[in-house]
Image (cartoon, rainbow, N blue to C red; front, side, top):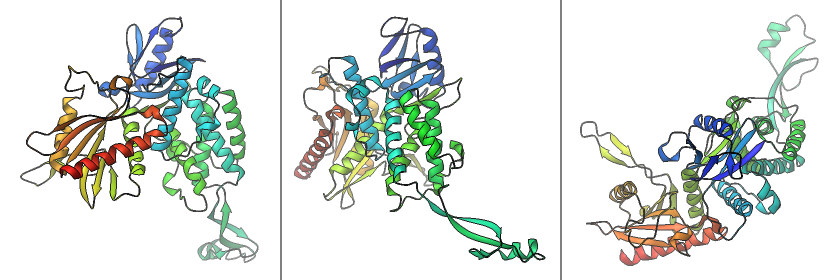
Length: 437
């Protein structure tokens, strides 16, 4: 299979040379991308199928069609690496870190060699992590639970099924209709794991991963097979007896359900594992902010508020509901509203707007009116064009109000420093609010 890698908003021209993709491969991948729910969402579709090139848009991940695959990586600046393969490896590492934070997974990225980060695609790395974690969990024992069974036995086991006994065995008292509980491994959780293993075996192109998946499929041979649409996610109970399976359940959701991504099947169609960067960046930052403010007197709400911009005069019905990405409160009073934007702003002296869209400003003004927060922040990904340090880049007072609207950036390529930088940014903002309040 021919594999290609491109970064969001970059192009792959058609051709057979290095850094090019044959037109017939591009046609297959573009056709697959069109079937994604992310296709056609304004500027955040999957691929732009041009006359001379295939251009990635605001969605990242993997598209795999017949005989070819395309890996779309986020536009994260890792300029310290000169080699393209090393840069792509660093970006894959940061993207998986973002997914781990957003999905509350504990992933030890250090277990994967630098060579694997460079040679394997995002999909194969995720499959490898899942296989290793599932293998370790299975070695400690598959989760089991009691299920009720019924059988006709020569001696009583459990409880007597009175109705069946006096209708089926009324003339044969040597057989007893019994109901009893059996500790079984054939549980909804194990059926989900089996479905994930089967799905990934069809999707993966790595011989090493396929070997791992074959071994896991053998372990799950006696578990009832179920199609992803028929899986009973609502019946899975995670408690102290099976807590170690929570992360694996999250990864199975990642592969089988449409959260940040979508998966499609069919040998002729191909498969896709896609992530909308706007949604992923929002969840990533929101969870890190929640961690950053742990132990303070501030509380964090993600996608909360839900106040309406308008109220119908005749019916008092609310119209145009708002959902700020992040609300920070003290004693129940909103002090800070943050909206994340996976966009690039500028720091040009001749551009006082810094590339911030007018629509985003209007949105924040609506939040200022509804939530009465003294401070609003538009938070963007940092890039070298903004200067050496991520920081607050501008502060403006909303006309006629004391409310401050600021633009800030955070460098997602900074690894473990992201949490500390967010904490510094937030607490500095809180201090400024207290001084001006």
